[in-house]
Image (tube, rainbow, N blue to C red; front, side, top):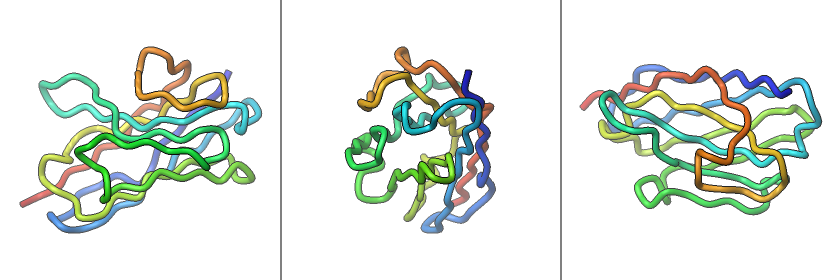
Length: 124
C-alpha cells in the first residue's frame, strides 16, 4: 500500500504560479512511477504530467507543456508539479497517482494509488 497526500493548491490569478506536492508513504517510493491528473467540474479526469521512477523521463499533456514541470525527490518520498503561467482553464482538482513499475504512463487506468486531490482555482 502507498498513501499519497497532495498539498499546495489554492486560488491564484491568471499568469501566476503554484507548486503542488505529493507526499508518499508506505512503500519504497522509487519503485513507482508518478502521474498528475486533474478534473474540472463537469468534466472527466484528464492526464496532466507523468514521471518515471527517477524523474529522468517525463511527459506532459499538450495543454500544459512548457508551463508545468513534474519532478520528484525520492529521498523525500515526494513528487512535485510546478505550475507557471496559469490560466483559468487550469482550474480543477489535481490528483497525484502512483503506479507499480518504474515506467511512466499517461493512462489513469494503470495507476494503483491515488491521493485525495487538491483544488486549484485560477481567476481571470
